[in-house]
Amino acid sequence: MPTELDNYLFDLRGYLVLKNAVEPAHVAALNTELDKFRALEPQGWHGNVHRADNFHANGKELQNIVEGGEPFERLIDHPAWLSHMREYVGEAGTFVDGLYIDECFATLRASGGFLPIHSGGHEAIVRTQYRYTRGKFHCGQVNVLVALTDIGPGDGATMVIPGSHHSSLQHPAFKGSFNDRGPMDTVEGAIEMHLSAGDALLFVDALAHGSALRTNPGERRVVIYRYGGSWGATRRGYVYSQALLNRLTPSRRAILQPISPLRAPEPANAV
Ligand SMILES: O=C(O)CCC(=O)C(=O)O
Image 1 (cartoon, helix red, strand yellow):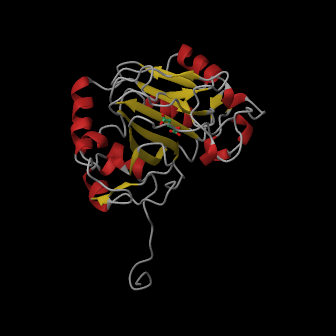
Image 2 (spheres, protein in one colour; image 1 turned 120 degrees about the vertical axis):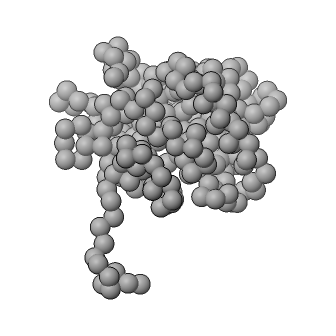
């Protein structure tokens, strides 16, 4: 369970760092699986994993990565953050009690890569909102970003503006369109999240965030799972394969498919 201090700091800053969240053997297994996708071209598919680089400089984005092998399935209900997600997003004790992963992907960022500033409390988007009311958290989307490599200065670290999930005003760095903005290195008030491989950054998506410019050689690897309420839909339209749903434990399946499809019997449902 998140501690009282976790809750206080999550409210204050909009993020938590979970040190050593994923054990080294699991991190190694995730990296080995990711190597399978090294040759995947933009827009290529490998099974049900799709390379979709959604911003030109972000790096390789491997969407629907939960279908990338068993080590990714273990992240769905990982004990290091599952109870945090239930507390912050899960609407526990209500008729919509539960979680749903609406996007999951890995990013492989080489030198020159970065992600511009985006999100922030000023957008007041319900899907990504930070909300604490009547003694409970009701966040729309909380992300867990797991470092699969050490991430330090020059590595293209994730950057956040602590507390910006509470802000009603837009930071002046939100100039022009997302695609025209540069890396976050010079954004006043933003800090780099340096992580060791296996650490996890948990943050409400309403936090203004993005990344620094990667200047070092080599590759920064992270995997990001976004958790929302049980009634959500996948962000980009990916459909979890029946093969994956069939082999998952009930706890994991309930997070990828909290509501089972309910169809009229044949032939009414024939297409
Ligand atoms: O790639 C990063 O460091 C930041 C990820 C991010 O911006 C996001 O999850 O929305």
